[in-house]
Length: 139
Image 1 (cartoon, rainbow, N blue to C red):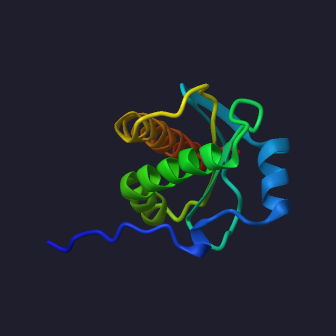
Image 2 (image 1 turned 120 degrees about the vertical axis):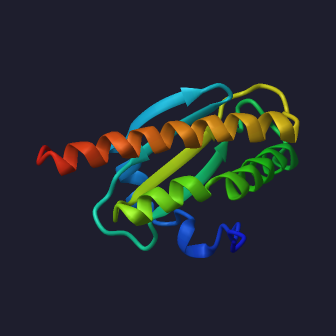
């Protein structure tokens, strides 16, 4: 069996201010402490799954702390996103997700990884619901 390539390449990153604006204007959100995820199912996109990460400067004054947490988030996302990416490809769906760290302390990688996994499982469930709605001829 072929080992999946764990990647988080440039097309998989949200860089467009327009898309970020759409996410926060029209997107929906859910929370799995210490994460809050804002997502949208745009039409066609550069990649089936695009993501961005943020940490509040209000909770973490030093940029080194914020960067450390974002690094932990990106790495756990990179290792855990394959099932979501596969589902989206199989069903020709596109998902943009913005994950925000809402905790007050710098977490351990194991904790971030565990919580990121629950966020991505929730995203798969949302994608399944969206797919069922489109398949039924709804919105």
